Image 1 (cartoon, rainbow, N blue to C red):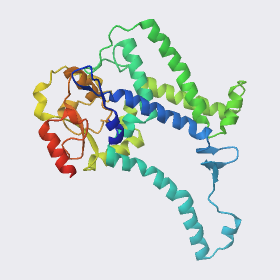
Image 2 (cartoon, one colour; image 1 turned 120 degrees about the vertical axis):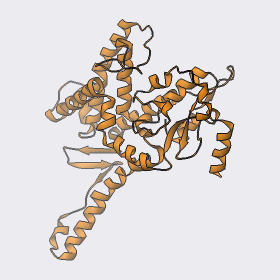
Image 3 (cartoon, rainbow, N blue to C red; image 1 turned 135 degrees about the vertical axis):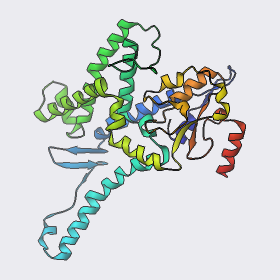
Image 4 (cartoon, rainbow, N blue to C red; image 1 turned 180 degrees about the vertical axis):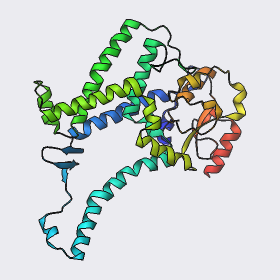
Length: 331
């Protein structure tokens, strides 16, 4: 469930089968991993970080300064104060407003697609869900739900080993990488190698690691639904938008539904896709599209729409009438 451009490429045809298979999940994993790498590499490449020792904000390799040098404060007149206030607004407030406005804009156009296709924290929660299913046969640590996916017959010792490795190394690596946003990455690495840490670096690594560990073990998607500011901004603007990306079911072909409930089992946000109603928890991940296409073999019942458009993609999942109407609206 993502940007229309990415989703347009998330379509692959298997010529040996009777139809086309849509593997949204594969492309979604690629975008998630790519964005995680971007987040981890930004401080290393000096794209964005704060150097706490020098007390400088680094943006694209340059020190981002407010430029309020001593001369600015010499003029105590009204014009001088106005000049300082304007400079502060342009260098400190406006840039952050522009950065934060990206998420409402994304929500207005693509709903919560950032959450489903890019968010590193969401990817971590999904991995934790996956491991819990393998070990306990359910997503939630606290009890089984009706829409929990089938665990199959997993090799328990193998998945216990993978879980232990994940619990240790993912928070640790995350703590080391993200501490680079507040301390020079070289400094962090030189301390990690011999295992000799200053208090600040040690506190950063432990703090981030604990946050990731507790979040992925105990909180998970509850955080996405009720706490995350980025998700809430996308949720609100996507809800009021008349053009935001949404997932819909082809009601003209609903009779083809086998009631397998695989679409509900695939949804880690506990959305019921067949209700065909806007749900603020839906992150446009496309898992229900994959699940339905897999069940029906040739073409499933779910597709993306842009606002009130009848069908956006995948076009093969729409009725011929729907496709004609969709093209007419685009013209």
